[in-house]
Length: 90
Image 1: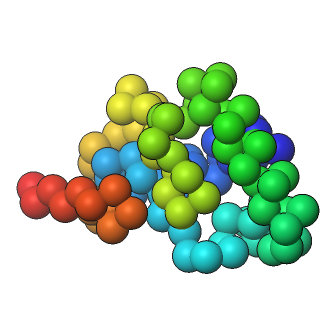
Image 2 (image 1 turned 60 degrees about the vertical axis):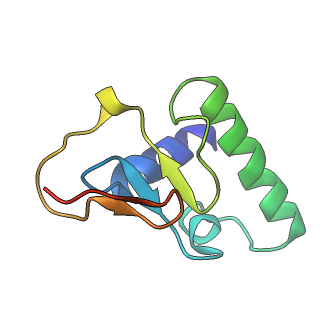
């Protein structure tokens, strides 16, 4: 599950490496029920991905944040993150 968290971060990341999700969206992507047990499972997977350095420590169920060396600052997508209050204009 922790590796699927990393893949979700990569698949939904914007230009600055943030992958924001609506409530319950990450659980749906990971194919986990959006109930108490599912939330615990997702939280553990996020904690494991953080411990392995696959996502940054400030990541949460609302925004998975990739390490800077793991994403490109080019291409399509936004350069903002409402969860972490970042808005870069290029």
